[in-house]
Image 1 (spheres, rainbow, N blue to C red):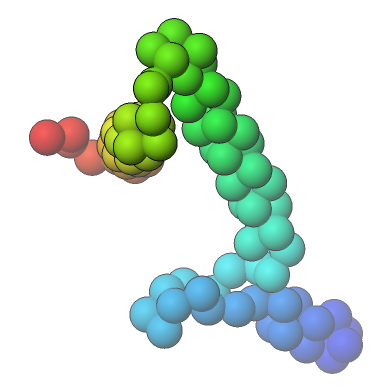
Image 2 (image 1 turned 45 degrees about the horizontal axis):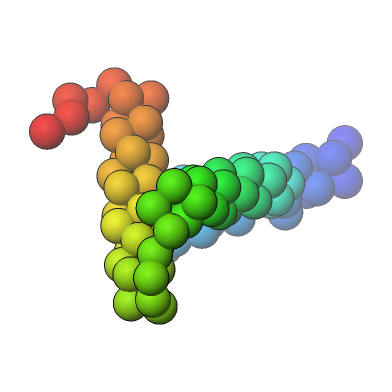
Length: 88
C-alpha cells in the first residue's frame, strides 16, 4: 500500500511555482497538439504563398508574421471559449 501511495505522489509535478500539480504524463499528452498547431500554421502559410505569390523575402516575412499573429489570436479565443470566458 505504501508503494502505491508513494508512486502516485511522485508523478505529480508543478509546471509553474503557483500552478497546481499535474501528472507528468499529462504534459506529454498535451505536447501532441503542439505539432498539430504547427502543421496547421505551416499549411495556412503555404496556402497564402500559393494564393498571393509574394515577390520578395520581405513580403514573405510579413505574411508569416501576420499569419502567426492571426492564428495566435484564434488560439486565445478558442482557449477563452473553452474556459467560459468572455472574448473582447
